[in-house]
Image (cartoon, rainbow, N blue to C red; front, top):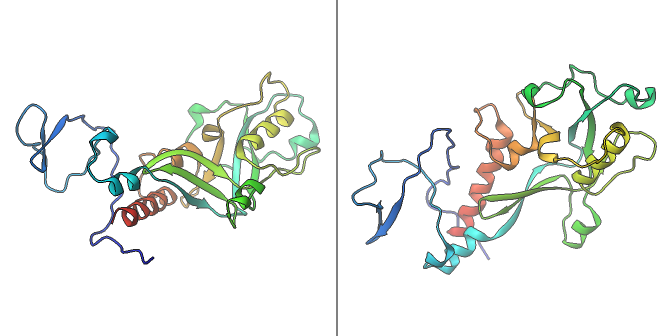
Length: 241
C-alpha cells in the first residue's frame, strides 16, 4: 500500500531545561487552561500532552501513537567504546588492549572514575533471534513505543582479542564479559550500558548511549541525535497521516 506523507513537515519536539507544566482541558475542539481561559503562549509554540488512552476518540490515531517500532541508529562495523574501571595488577596483555587515556574525548569526567579506561568494541551482524524476525542487518537500534524510547538493542558485538572473549549477542552481555575480564575485583559484573557504553558524534566527542535513548538536550553539533529523532518523527508522521 502506498504511504502518503503529511502535507506539512514533521518537527522534532524542541527540548528545554525550563519547561513549565500547564494543565489544560479540551473544550469544543480547542485546548483551554484547566481553570479557565486561553493558554496564553505565542503562536507556533510546541509542547506535549500527557493523556490517558481512554480519552482518544480515533483508534487509528491512538494505534499510531502507541505502535512499537525499531529505528536503526548505527551500522554494523561501527566502533563503540566501553568505560571500565581499571585497578593495579591487570596483566600486560590485557593492559595493551586499553585505549590511551587521551584517545577518547568526552565531557563526562565528573561522572567517571580517575581509573576509567576505554575498551573498543564493534557492532556486528544480526543475532539469531533477529534473523528469525527477518532482520537483515545488525548494528544498533532504538526501540520505541510511539515516540517513547524503551530500549536500545544491538546485533552481534565483537570484543577485543583477549583470551576467552568471543562475539556476543547483546551490549549487556558484552559489558558483563568485559567487566569479568578487565574488572576482576568487582563482586558483580553488571552495569548500565546507557552510562558505560559510548558512541562517537561528528563533533569528535564520545557520548553515552543514554543521550541517544533519552533524546538529550543538545546543541546543533550533536548531529547523530538530531538525525535519529528527525527520522523517528518522520516515521510517526507517516503512520498518523
